[in-house]
Amino acid sequence: MGLAISGGGYRSMLTASGFIKEMDNYGIFDCLSYISGLSGGSWVLMDLLSQNFNVSSLLSNWKLNDGLLKGVPDFDIRHHDIVSGMEEYEDALVKRTVSDEGALRQFFYNFEESLQLAAFLFQEDDEQKRVTKRGVGPLAKIMDFFLQRNDKQEEEDLDDNENSLFGSIQSLHQVIQFYIDLHLGIRPKKMQGFTISFTDYLGKALKKKLSNTKGQSSSFSQLMMNSTKFQDFKAPIPLFIANCRNEHLKNVIFEFNPFEFGSWESNLGLFVKMPYLGSTIEAGNPSRCINGFDDIGFITATSSSIFNNVLIYIWQLTAQSSRETMRAVKNIMSIFGLGNGKLDEKSFRPTSLNNLDTDYAVYQPNPFYHYPGINNELTQNDYLYLVDGGEDGENIPLRPLTIPQRNLDIIFVIDSSSDEFNYPRGKKLKNVLHQLQNEEIDSHSYSIPDFDKVNQYPIALGCYQPHLPIILYHPNAPHSYNSNTSTFKITYNESEVNGMLQNGRVIFSLSSNPEHMDCIGCLIAKRRIEQVDKSRMPKICRQCFEDYCH
Ligand SMILES: *[C@@H]1O[C@H](CO)[C@@H](O)[C@H](O)[C@H]1NC(C)=O
Ligand SMILES: *[C@@H]1O[C@H](CO)[C@@H](O)[C@H](O)[C@H]1NC(C)=O
Ligand SMILES: *[C@@H]1O[C@H](CO)[C@@H](O)[C@H](O)[C@H]1NC(C)=O
Ligand SMILES: *[C@@H]1O[C@H](CO)[C@@H](O)[C@H](O)[C@H]1NC(C)=O
Picture 1 (cartoon, rainbow, N blue to C red):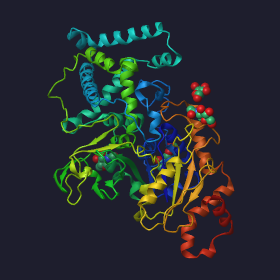
Picture 2 (picture 1 turned 180 degrees about the horizontal axis):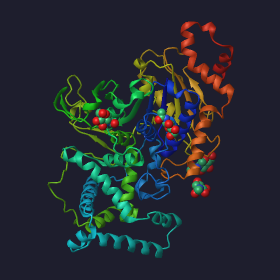
Picture 3 (picture 1 turned 135 degrees about the vertical axis):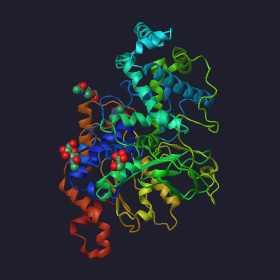
């Protein structure tokens, strides 16, 4: 059995968490062999891993009322300039937030440099002293800047959004400290000579959301090796899903599992052992051995890299109006003591990264570099660009579970994609099914149901195709709560959290409906019963198959 959790930001994370808790109530979660997640869905995996798969405490350590990132106000950032085009994300036509690549790269180095400087300023206990010692008092300057900005805002008679936005930035120092901490967390990786990207910052931020990870190693493979539950086969194998974006190759699915990283798809078909991710390997021969590159935050952030834009957004927001982005960045740079474009030439500027985009996760060195017999974008460069798992328009990490070698009987899907009013209408599932049809060689593939008739209740696919796993698809729907919050809503209060979780529970069990639960049992057991003796199929199951199978 497998479970696939779609993307959809906190909406997906919350809905899927409720779903999983209800699955666990019925003892079904413990039976899963695999659990795959992408984007917001991958956050559930990270949370599960951080507490050794204890479903009861799922989300209990995740600070939900505090925003995804410090200083990000509680409103839908999708409607603001910096993320214009974000709605397109849902259709996988992601328009990049900053179209001028040169400017973007510049922005990234400025971002880094300013954090570096800020870290330096803040590092001594006697902060004030250091600041005065420097004469210019940059900290005071920053404070002035923000205070002035606040006054100016009020004068300008802005709308409510803008006001609450500054109201929610409670303490500038706290906010800046948050980003400095991120920066300090990333420094060791950079010092080792690795190329870093916004995704590294997002990864640190995501890990900070979990209050219980202090002192825990961050290595994905180590976490799994240390988990007795996992080692005793009592927990599902987690699969984090990302896409690639290397020149012309866009929709190649990559997976991170506790053992390996790589892709099943025909244009690669290679994996590298997870503990050695980050090692220098050329033509399959390792030369420099690295451990610990497989940071759980970094992997999760890779799968959800679309949220890099949130990070960029707040950084710009704290500086200036989002409409004057680049000017704002320049301003803050000068406040931090960096002149216009006056960057250290010896800064860690990578030379080979020509198409760096906001949502890229840079994997350099590329473990598949010059691998013999494969000559395409995935092996030609010593770096690999990965992006959010939802950017191929599928948004449901289903394909990695249909791999025949995984031999699954049934795959549960909890889909919190946004097709219409932030509810799914089967569009992403349709995309996946089309993709599977394209790949299928022996024409045993899923038929595509009429989604207009089924948009509230679970449906089953592939029931009568014994070579395929049954897909039990659950759309997010407003059963007990209006669960169509925006993908980019990143703060939830307690009652919202409870509403979302409860609704996720109802999606799974339809409020503990006994007939429904019987039918889930029938669907789970269908393949095995058929293998033994079809005639032993319980009578009630026949009705279930009629009702659920499309
Ligand atoms: C799982 O979490 C619950 C709630 O936080 C806790 O009461 C329980 O002891 C935990 N179980 C294990 C095995 O750690
Ligand atoms: C795993 O166990 C080893 C040895 O006990 C320890 O050094 C390491 O920090 C542990 N890692 C995690 C992720 O707990
Ligand atoms: C939620 O769905 C309703 C229709 O069911 C729609 O009117 C509303 O705008 C949606 N809310 C969001 C945030 O998309
Ligand atoms: C939580 O947010 C909702 C809006 O979604 C609001 O109606 C409610 O009053 C808030 N509750 C608290 C305790 O702030």
